[in-house]
Structure formats: C-alpha cells, structure tokens
Length: 195
Image 1 (cartoon, helix red, strand yellow):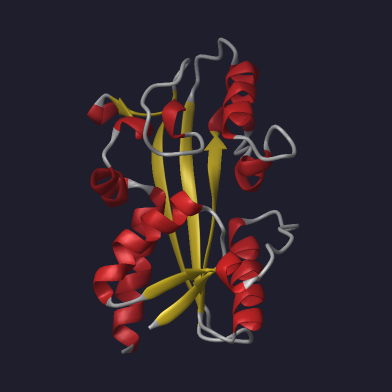
Image 2 (tube, rainbow, N blue to C red; image 1 turned 180 degrees about the vertical axis):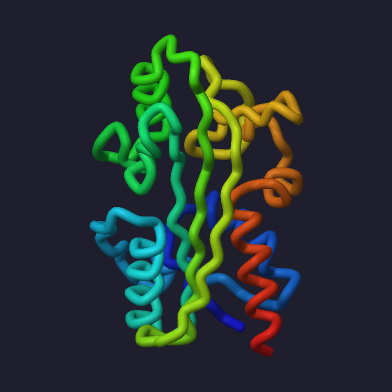
C-alpha cells in the first residue's frame, strides 16, 4: 500500500519507514509529491495531526499518515507541547529549542517530561473514521545534552531505567520504546484488523 506521509522531516520518515516497510507499506513524503506543509493552528496533537493527514490525502489522492508530536514538560504545565518544533521561533531549530528549554528550566528540580505522539491514518481526505493512535514516553530533562543520535529534544530527554538519553539509543531500541514507536504499534495493530 502506498501512503503519503504528511511531513518533510527526513528523520521522522526514516523512523516511520523502518516500522512500516516490513508490512509492505510504502511511505512517500509529501514534499516528493509537491505538497506544501499545512498550518498547524490547533492546540491539541490530535487536531493538528488530523488536519495534516486530510491535507496531504486531499492533494495526493492517496491514503495519508500524519504524526503530531512534541515534548510536554511538567514544570511548564505541558508546554511546549504542540509548539515544540517552533519553541524558539522561526526558522525551526533543534539547537535553539534545546537552548531555550534549558534556559527556561534553569535550576528547577522538578524535571519530569513526556514525549507525546498522535498518529492519524485516513483512507481518503474526507474519511469519517480516521484511525487515531497515541503514545507517551516518560522521562526527565537533563541539564546538558548527551548523545549524538536522534533529533529534536532527544539529547536532553533522559530515561532513568536505561541511564541514557534518547539520543544515546540505537534506532531499533528507540523505535521500540519511543512515543512514536508506541503510537505506530497501536496503529499497525488496528490497520491489520482492517485487512
């Protein structure tokens, strides 16, 4: 099955493709089809993900998959949340986002956080029953970056039971544990029941 991925993020595509390719699903990034990114004006991951999936599906004429994810920090009441990618403003910059997060947290002792992912699958742009799957990955924010893999806030996201940051995990382990990996596993389970 060919699906349009409502994202141009190469690292996100690689993560998703690693999980979906063995099932025989081919992910085509929307940029490859000339589809521009859509606005994400909503205050929830679900609404943003659904808007992205419908937009990509409408313009591609294909089923679509969209992910909206972000980092929710307990000390900030869940922020940056849906604004995670642009936390430090435009243009998007992982380095500036991480700097701003560390600066805002300062010496705060309470450093609990969670990554959230909401993945939406639509069969067509007006699908009345989109499949929605969610995942959460709990950890803490480090006071300095660790690791060279991953992207986004991964170098600051610490998993206590592993004594590693998300950026210190290999791709396979990250896919098994991550918010996106959890959401995708739930999505795949539901999609397989449709066949």
